[in-house]
Length: 112
Image (cartoon, rainbow, N blue to C red; front, side, top):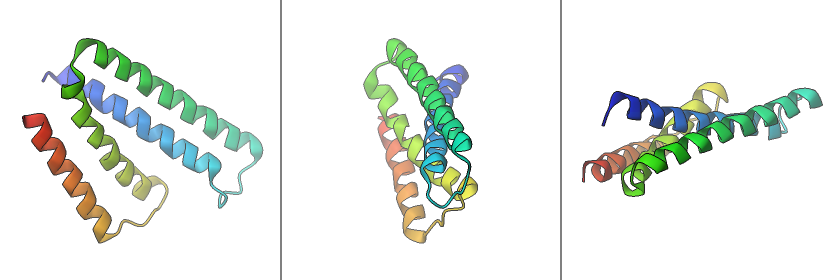
């Protein structure tokens, strides 16, 4: 795996995570943001997810799905960390165990 390929995979996962974070912020009932701010968050989420989707398509064009798909586990890990950092969500012990198992599974599948 080249550094460029790894960077593209991380970019794809980051776009997907950013999109989810923007969607959550736009749809959250706890945030008393003006309507324009919520629409801006929603649009940012759509843009981030679109960039991620286009990157995924470019990766699929060049590599086998069986090679790329295990890296989708990175999304779950990044999303859990980002939710903790940016949305101030509580990370429980069970959630950390689950994230660790996802990482371990991704390593096993990618190494095979």
